[in-house]
Image (cartoon, rainbow, N blue to C red):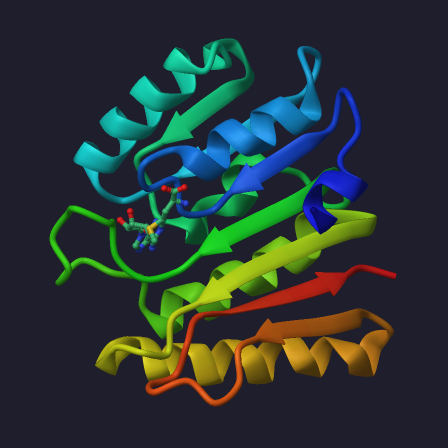
Length: 176
Ligand SMILES: C[S@@+](CC[C@H](N)C(=O)[O-])C[C@H]1O[C@@H](n2cnc3c(N)ncnc32)[C@H](O)[C@@H]1O
């Protein structure tokens, strides 16, 4: 809902973890026919599946896919040009759970997202602390994104409380 609020017809958006393509298709719908989405995933199967899903939704023209790490964001987007960057961390649902996002790359890509976003742009990150590798990454991401408040960003977290094991949570940060 909040990402949809900030995106306008003609905007540029980034899907940093394309996976099965649901977020890419969502972003493509939000930016309209004159907008563009740049989508990254390191797995060929994810890129194939995401491309198929985006095409089936009728948005093939709007999304450019890169089978690359999201640490390559600066190679494809200039500073201050992007309206929203979306990360959905962890592993590909239905894929190899051993291939998942990892803290060092995620933190680099977040720093890059901070640069390419334009004022008023939104960073959206879903973290998965419920699995072993995801817990450390989620903590590092929460710290990193929270630290943006020191340079004027508005930051929010949305999470369930009192769950049996740590539940996924969403972090949102709006660039000043
Ligand atoms: C939870 S899935 C994303 C789901 C997706 N957003 C969707 O709508 O279906 C996480 C994805 O991140 C990808 N990934 C892992 N490390 C990555 C990296 N360094 N750069 C880009 N994608 C990465 C995985 O291959 C996996 O497909």
